[in-house]
Image (tube, rainbow, N blue to C red; front, top):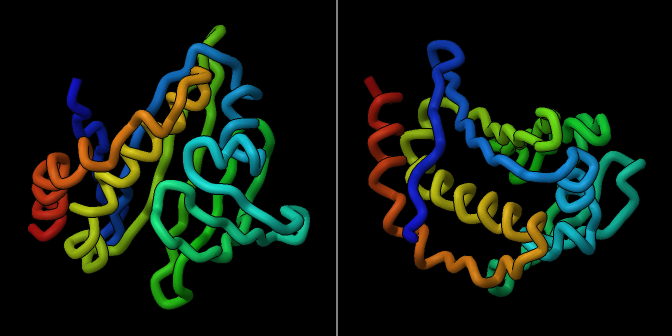
Length: 173
């Protein structure tokens, strides 16, 4: 089955937008939290990190990107096991990323968000959207105990680029 674009792109104010993606898990928030935040577990689907999170910053190396160098990730907020907000990327255009977990009976709902300004959205959303679909589907596989490496980037990009281009164009209007 081919992946589909599940993201939603909401306008926050005149120039600010937010990409929102959801995923559902048949496990507790604590289980999802461990796969999100433990370096070894996170390395199964996104990347490993080194450093002391208590310092407010770690160095992350992505696992599905060839030749990726470690990059600084600032921990802006951490409320285990329900919320983590981080900042990564260059200071002039940092990415603020948030993963919020909500318990729903015996299941967990993940809401992932990335705010961005209009100019950045127009230029980057068609690439960012498919990337987060890819990584969040890898997270779902890792939480389920499956091999996230069975999820292939080529199934996501460029096939999911067009729906995210449409979302970006709506931001242009």
